[in-house]
Length: 273
Image 1 (cartoon, rainbow, N blue to C red):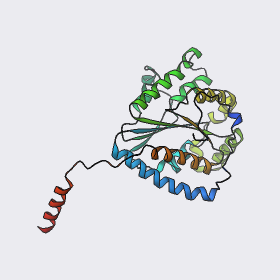
Image 2 (cartoon, rainbow, N blue to C red):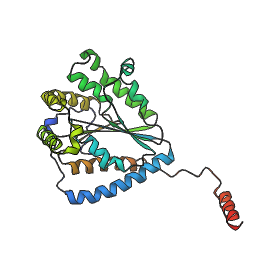
Image 3 (cartoon, rainbow, N blue to C red):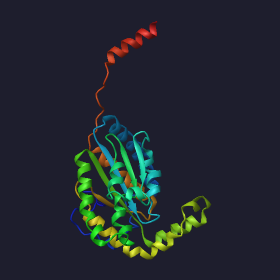
Image 4 (tube, one colour):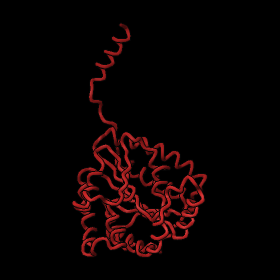
């Protein structure tokens, strides 16, 4: 089992997990070279997944604001061919979406066979922000953990592999990243008044995440808690896990669907004409 994987049935206490952890065997310089190799391998494996067309991969990214969801997509998952990979963000649900069950819009965004879907935030918002801000009664959101597990299990039974990453940063690191956004004009578009207001609910979010991670990490759809104060280590850890998982699928090049010898004959005939 990966050291960052949440053991099914265990109780997560985020205060016991160091967000500034970095493996003593890794350095930023060495990580950059390994990440380069992992990105190349990831693209190769994704192409096999697409070509084989038998299964799909769903990657869920969650974390506090500035945790690195966008950075992980850009630096690691962005290596994949967009022909078979897409990123889905989930904003505040529309009136039409609210007229259905909370998983309705999520199911529509699930990956098709051969496809990789990356959720930048996900269905877990319905047991996170909804819980923290009392948007629905406790009796409603408290039932959603089992509903999420059943939903994810159904996806797995239909050929979708699921990897879920909680990008774990410290409250101090978040404040530093907010400051960098303020100082960088190219990042001003990311700033909102809610950023600092939401920090007032930090402990409430921690409690909500701990319950989601504890109750919804299963053997079929595991959660990984990734130390994310060091961006380079976050990228390295996520890349290793995704590549290792895809390698474990034993993906194979599909057999050709056409008569290659016939095509070769037609090629030579055309060449000699």
